[in-house]
Length: 156
Image (cartoon, rainbow, N blue to C red; front, top):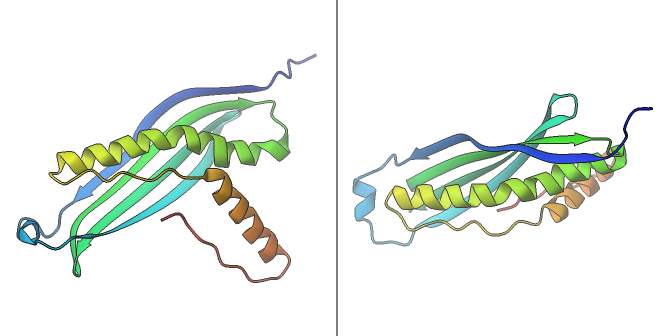
């Protein structure tokens, strides 16, 4: 009889991608206006091999003064997780809630650090309720499957 003990282990956390752009420097740095900050988050999960999953959380931070970009940071933090012998009805929740909650603090630290190293005040990403995001996505998918229209919101 095969061992059916549930397994959940973090194999590795790593920075998958990082980009910083300051397209209008140095002129834009002389502006005295308060910049507008836009933050977009995305999450993805994919199978690497049997029982091994990669979960990524991406933050895109755009700051503008008037219509000119001050700086743009895009960071993608990833984690590799071993997940075995978990019921199918729980797997999506683990990949969409539990794993991103473990990856996200690393992403927050990286975004803050990159902004500081670029010469700007740190951008502190707010805490994210991945469970609420997951539930909203499930409701939207259910509404679409039932022929209804829905509005999908993302974390900003």
